[in-house]
Length: 100
Image 1: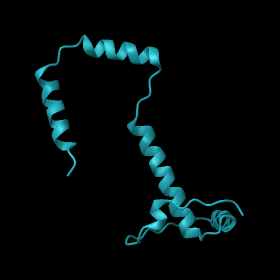
Image 2: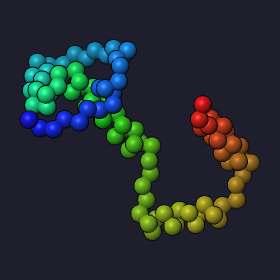
Image 3: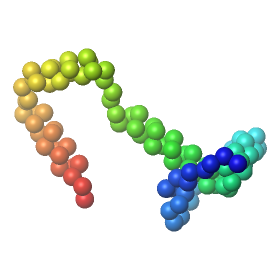
């Protein structure tokens, strides 16, 4: 049996419900993979979906630059005088980003 690392989304108490419809072929595939890991299809599906969601959010929320592009980008930022609109936008961002 392959090692299974439970996702936090699987370990936490369950209070929300989701339902999906799929083909019999996909259901069989998920159940077979889940069985190899020693978990049920629901746990397998939730863990896989949570991982895919985190990966998607990471990809959409991050911008990666090569070191040379980063240096050019930072130089451009340093050369730019902030406008009143930009200052206001950054102030708004700081306010809405504060931990609650």
